[in-house]
Length: 210
Image (cartoon, rainbow, N blue to C red; front, side, top):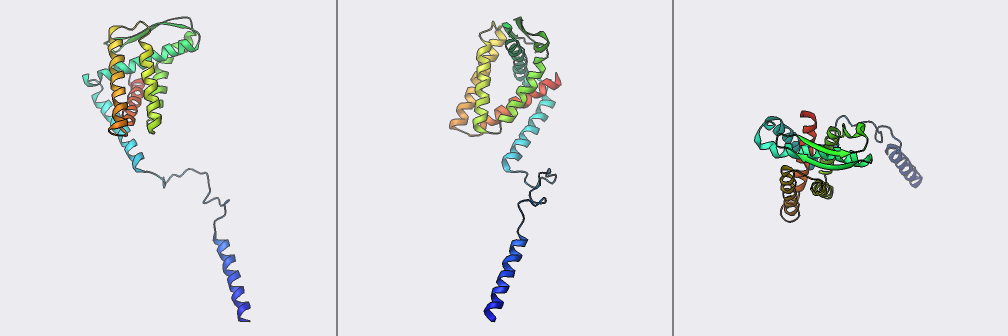
């Protein structure tokens, strides 16, 4: 009698435990609704990323018209002109020259291609590549890939009749970016990610401010 009662209590206990376990189809636990309370935010890496991005935006805003940002403005002009050139190549045209001037202007000389795609590609390209740099800066390998793409674009530009400023600009940023790659590999690990994040934030800001 006692053993039967004990077994009955054990069965009832196991049934109640099963009943209290969340169902895999429980809409409260397994819902796809947005987490507006941000219960999973934020890790240390996310806080650093957001803080740097916000700090870069503030620095760009207050220093925009100073000589300190002149090289970055010129490299943003390069990205603008390279986007024109890329659209020209994609639409079957031929690029004759890529130039950047000291007054923060630039020109892409080309033949053929689809003009309706080439003309708006400058600012659209700045927005796109700015977003790419920001996105890829979140990972060490991805930031290395974005840096290598940037170096490749700088090297390619030297093959299309660049003016003197374009040559110095390309060589200078190639040395800077390769230096950060070296330091990131052997000295301080996230350094290249910080650089690619700044590239992305500045190029994206340029497409809005200018």
